[in-house]
Amino acid sequence: MSQLNCGGCDRPAMLLIKALQHDVLEGLARDQPVALLMSWICERAESLAPDVVCSILSIDPAGRLRPLVAPSLPEEFSLALDGLAIGPTVGSCGTAAFLGEPVEVTDIATDPLWSDFKMLALPLGLRACWSTPIHASDGRVVGTFAFYYRSCRGPSELDRTIVQGCVNLCAIALDQRDRKDRIQRLAYYDVLTGVANRASFERFTREAIATAMKENACLAIHWIDLDNFKNINDTLGHNAGDALLKTVTQRISATLKPGEFLARVGGDEFAVVQPSAGSHGEIQDLACVLAAAVSQPVDIDGTVAAVSASIGIARAPQDGSDLALLMKKADLALYETKSHGRRNFSFYNKGIEERIASQWTLEQALKTALARKEFELHFQPVVDLATVAITGFEALLRWRRPGHGLLTPYAFLPAAEKDELLICDIGDWVLREACTCAASLPGELRIAVNLSPNQLRKPGFALDVVSALAASGLSPQRLELEITESALLLENAVTLNCLSDIRQLGVSIALDDFGTGFSALSHLRAFPVDRIKIDRSFVMEVDESHATASIIRAIIGLARELGVKTTAEGVETETQLRVLADFGCDEIQGFYVSRPKPLSAFDDYLRRGDSRRRLSAAS
Ligand code: C2E
Ligand code: MG
Ligand code: MG
Image (cartoon, protein in one colour):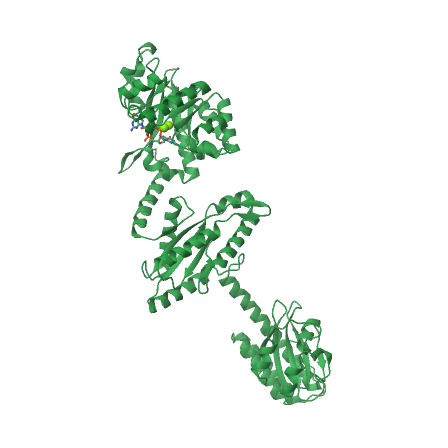
């Protein structure tokens, strides 16, 4: 605080100003509201200089006047000033704020600075106005301190002393208010998107739930999670991710009705509270609107990113009236949406919890299964129809899960596929184990290993194959990798390059479950494969449905023309076998020959000489 210099003013006035400074500083230390401190300043200034009307305005970040206190002026006067943009001819205060210097107008009636505003001041008997800007510590003008006079005059020596002391106090008080505002914003608003943050979401929703309970109304929480946001962040960068979040925020905000509340509650998670949700249909309508609003492509600096959202909904009082519980339930419903392929919404229901609990336990158990050596491979022989001899085996994964017996892949692979790292680790184990087992088999026998699409997407997967072959000593010609059509559906460069690297090693590629995917034949054009495995769903009807038989015959004929081998999967009867042999199918696999079994089950058969390895011996 600068030292007061009171030239000719009297000592009692000085003491009163000092007392005011002391009181205001103490008020600030006690965290009194800024408006209250400002009123003290005005009232004390007016009592020191009785012919003066005092007013304090603040200047908002947009450069507009915001009246703070003017105890002796009518409210209409302040209201008329509220929101005026500062400028070179905006009365005494607007001009002082604009110039950053005090402005003395000794005759409001004639001074051009007041020409647009004199009709506000003159009827109140205000004839002159002296306004002093209030500067923040960084030099910005954050307010004005004005003395109005009822006669045409300028400030007296005493007035100047009072204002000198008060302006500094005002600067400190406004600084404190701004600091508090900033802290408040940081505490309750999301810096990136400007919408409420998780803390304000919780504060708002807790109160909204209490109100809904009192009024017997229904409240809904829509928990929104962007699908694949991580991919966008990873591929286009964090700035792109930030831009996307801002766009999504604007889109959601634009769909909301008055009373509905949006918050960003996590990295790519938003929550919308529907305080008077009404019927189930109304909640569903809002969820649809939210999903549609988010699921529009976003243009980020010329790159168009596809965006979609998954939504989980919990309702009060139906699902509970405790905020933490409702948030948990909305999150569970969201998880349910995600596990059903995303881009949708789900309402919480009890069944979800049970499904998720067992799914979660399954996923946790899967994560430790490799380390605990709970996986094993079973092998199903593949038989050549021309020679009726086993030409190789398909390695099929099994999980000996403690307390659950021996599980087939259908029971656990979908869960493993959700975790790219996990499925790749499991796949790597299968590949190595299968190669090692195959290396112990007689030289001409092949081993087929199933691949997950995730493995093919993994950069450097071809090197994993090289490493598994090297570690086991298996020759590449004896390894066949089975891919499903969904892997080829991606048809992206990484997958196709990876497949072609693998083929160049001498490893062959089989297209598994042929016929179950989409536009199956076009895949053969996109990537050449060595073998087609006709799916069991066709094979099981080959001797019953004329149409199915025709399709299989066509597939076999086409494959032959393309120089691709065919294997029929899931052959269970001799009739099926005969029809397939008639059609010219190369190989078969199925329970008719043998169920998948541990390799040791084939020991007897494998011990025999090559010439005696015949189909009948294997089953
Ligand atoms: P797939 O590759 O089509 O394997 C053939 C499946 O059909 C095997 O089921 C096999 O037990 C079953 N099967 C074979 N012959 C017959 C038959 O005559 N009748 C009937 N009803 N079924 C027969 P499994 O072992 O349960 O494997 C299911 C699927 O799991 C496999 O289908 C494959 O897509 C996947 N899979 C298996 N092991 C692995 C693996 O190590 N990695 C990956 N990524 N997927 C695997
Ligand atoms: Mg297979
Ligand atoms: Mg198959």
